[in-house]
Amino acid sequence: MRLWRAYYRPKQVDEALTILAKYKGDARVVAGGTDLLLEMQQGHKPPVTALVDVTGVEEMRGIVAENGRILVGAAVTHTEIVASELLVQKATCLVESCGVIGGPQVRNVATLGGNVAHALPAADGTTALVVLDAEVEVAGENGRSWHPILSLFRGPGKSAVDHTRELITRFRFVAATGREGSAFKRIMRPQGVALPILACAVWVKLAEGETAVIEDVRICIGPVKPVPCRAEQAEAVLRGRTLAEALADCVMAAQNEFSPRTSKHRATAEYRREMIGVLLRRSLPLAVSRAQTGQIVPEGVGLA
Image 1 (spheres, rainbow, N blue to C red):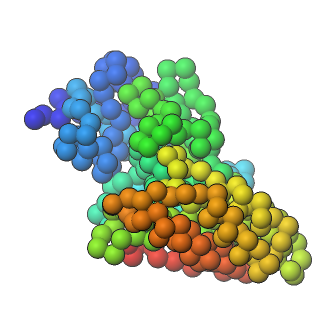
Image 2 (cartoon, helix red, strand yellow):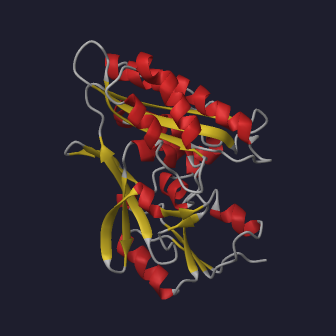
Image 3 (tube, helix red, strand yellow):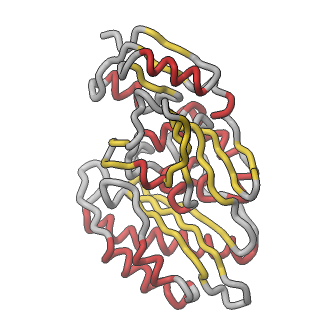
């Protein structure tokens, strides 16, 4: 079966939007294609009249620092993210999350925008963007607007973005400064790289002083709900305390807050609930250490 009839490679966002509008819902945006094309081949998504390849849109390809923020184009690949020294230093958890997606061949073509657009709560790049408190720029016929990343998800594989008429163009988030650190950890099935059993991203800001009191924190664990989410109860337990004082309470709060379901593709509910504690005990001390010392060496990158 023929999966598409026309293939376009626009150079500008407006050009891409014009093509999408021309096909009135029967065209789809594609970048790396590591999700969309497989789903079409396997019959999970129907064939379309046209594909609109956005990898040639220059403004969707950059990684830049601007006024204390970092902007990452939606068509930037995971390999490019891992190679960015700016992101290593200022958004470490994003580098670690993108560095364990698939294998090298997948990371060379798969994009951050595609990871988010697919709208799965297990998406590694999304998990990191949530704790970076990222915003997403969406372009459509009525112009462009920025949205909090969590507002883009409606359910597993269901995005608030209409990918037949709109484009995710860029992401932005505040660059880490002194006394801030982040980390990402995941547990996956040993016989493959496609499915994480559970993943965890954390971001911490330490108060000034020598006691390493956690002034602010963001935690995202997934997949534990139909959409990506913050571990708000676990975060509340940590604020205003040192990690040594609060880690056990944080783990208990997170395990009470979430009830991961049993999945034949991942693991049992009981095992995954236990792994919430394992991931927090691995990721939080690493993020706090980075915030204290400023010494950053991404872990696990390219080893999935």
